[in-house]
Length: 303
Image (cartoon, rainbow, N blue to C red):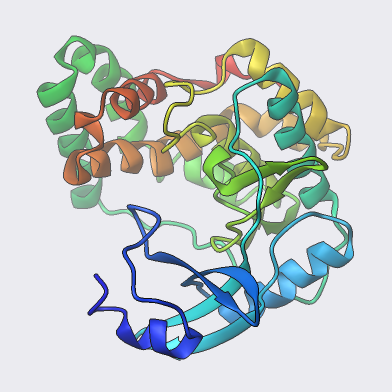
């Protein structure tokens, strides 16, 4: 890996090393005596404006210390290294995560220029690829769930473009600059609470979809953490902390089940199918999470 990223190491003045993160290159170093994490960042200029805007509004988030530098096909940025601990699954940590997401969604709009949310345009062939991919991982790893999951999700996948997608896309839901990756692994907890250390998937999108993604995938890729999505009690704690800052509209509340279904079909199914390609199903903890994810629906998570 060090040979592939030699220009990154040279440009930021950090020692060659292996990535700290298995799914994307993240490197640790020091710049001017300050510990940093160096990573790729999409829409880097807009991302920098966004996180600085959030920090100015009192939302604890990392902001760039160096970069962006165009290296190869990507922009690279150095963020401050945040000392603290990982999410521990406690009620206090769950409430703090919901509180911080609510504060992020409630932050005043700024002229950040984050890219807009890209609505999908699936054809019949791509839908059948998703169904086949889901069938493949379930047959290989959880044949006991195959009939149940495919029986429920295959019809939803096949009707997505005519039902779930337009229900959300055409509703004119309130949009905000949002994380679209609100997961426990992207938070570091300190004495003052959690800090968002990986804002790099941020886009301008319906805030309801960001909330739905959080409820489904908050425990994804979490070593040693709960091997499942939120329990009913955990969701209630997260939701109530979030709603202390955000007043959802009547339309958002009515469309909440559709939003959860949207993110389950678009992001949840991809996570499960992709997990078969990268070995996630071979890890007992992650396999249990993926199995629970595929059996989730909006009735678990009332608004």
